[in-house]
Length: 186
Image (cartoon, rainbow, N blue to C red; front, side):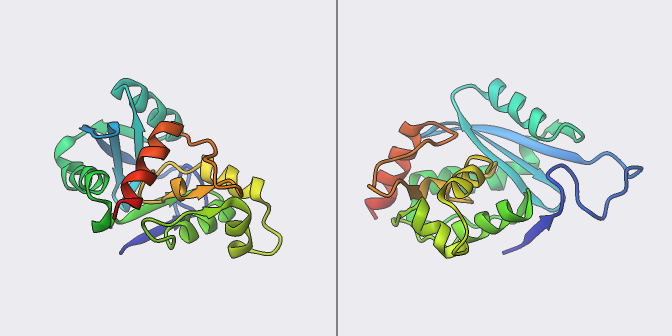
């Protein structure tokens, strides 16, 4: 597994302001959960988005990466898209992608730890916060989950309320419910 962690949400710390504009390739596909958009930098997958309208997903990625040159290139992300849609249909196979995580230190810490939650298991925001630090609040964990642009590969859908109820999910609570149902059927 390849993992790139950057200091900035928009560009690697090693890049200067004068560096060339980064090109991000992306593609969309149909899936059992609706439309999927996968975006990839030279360093790995930087976004997996779920939704109903591919144009909305493209608009979101443009907002998320405003300094990047976005390039629709299904060939460049074909394998990544195939892995994501295969995971949706068969979650027991896991989802192994090289990731280019862009966020704050705390967000990346949460996202790394989320990747250790096994398929078919859920944890509460408060339990998860204790995994991070005795001082990590459930709200801070929830904010980091909400900022996660790499759905499924960073499985924030596996974090639930303390009473087991489903809390919000950027990609829709029904998608979260369906993902958890599929994972529990393993």
